[in-house]
Image 1: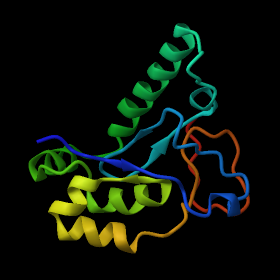
Image 2: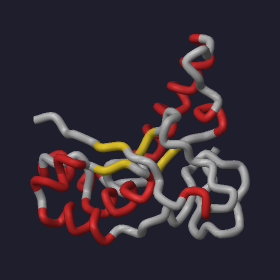
Image 3: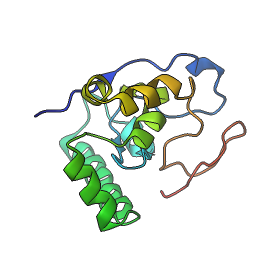
Image 4: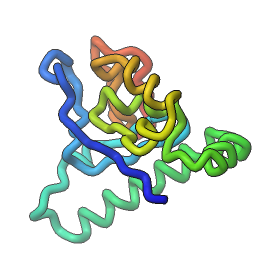
Length: 144
């Protein structure tokens, strides 16, 4: 079964000082914890970008994913695979405020629907890949 995600705008984004995540630009997220990666390189990609720039940005996202996956146990990875879901409820709760909603999980699983419904309305931190933290965000992790 394919998993369906709905991407939407971040309601209240203009209220976030120093918030740099742009959902219309390339990014990568963790299906277990909902951590997001989008560095400046990703935010610079446009339809007119050179293939080399697109390739470097793609490699950076892949490298982040490989590195980040190691922060979770094999048991966590296996549990997600066995669940048949795209993301965990914890990841859904973190992703929804960024405009990334795991629609198929929300429709098929009450726990995911509840996580999405009770998620904060605004992101609580910015995506990983930033070089500096900004006032107004807690828990920003810098792994550029």
